[in-house]
Length: 348
Image 1 (cartoon, rainbow, N blue to C red):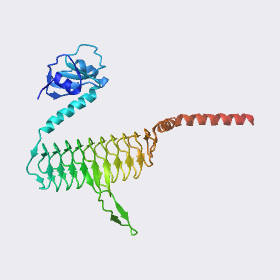
Image 2: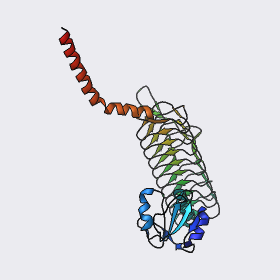
Image 3: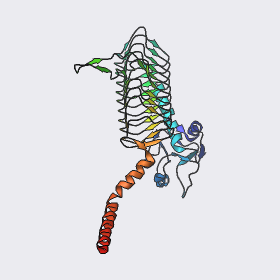
Image 4: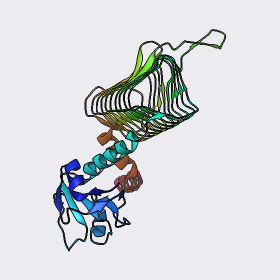
């Protein structure tokens, strides 16, 4: 399928500069794109390729200045990176819309409600009273447990497991191998040193426009719901424990772990391998640096922290600078001690 520069410009609200009839069928990186591919330039580090690339069409910022002639047709936009992302999303939507029907073998319970333009891949399992809204895509080998509901345009990739009674909103993407609604880690210690399992009878609610990476686990609540709010973006290999709440548009990088009943605010950014203990409050706009360990609530909005235990980011940088200067300080102290000793000797 080919698209012209004019058609692409309409999709991303851009302005064509050059041959408006230029056509592309694929996407490519600006440094090695071919003549039937579209590329973009957002990072100045790659500007040199603007003049050497073979790409037929290139998306650039309005502010991009040309230092020499360009062979490709340009589409100027406010933000080239965002425009390219929008275009990729449109392309992916077209690809997904072509998937419809139920492949065999697959199991779909007779009580399940299946909307229009739904796709269910081979070896998928759809349980009792499941609701799949219009244009939902369930890829092969996915498991959708009893009484699960999934909103319009959501995509469940291969091997995803969604346990019973969980709720998934619209335009949600869950990548391969992720488990939604497994039991929370609840065990009551006994006097004899053993543990009694605490039944986990809640569920997981994932609101609209959430994306969850591969091989992550989001545990169901003991009671109530583990909640992932609208717009949150979760990376691969995350552990979200029972009764956790993740705020609107929060972003969490790979290998982070959030313990039970912690509440993450809106627009929080959490780096890779961060660990957060249970029952904490993390204020809106907080930024937590990679590999930090958070053991206390963060109550002030837009706070940045780092370290283990995590503390104020600016103070941490000052502390690190002081640590690096310790060898010089040691030499200065030794010199001062020597001078003081000489002065005391002279005085005697």
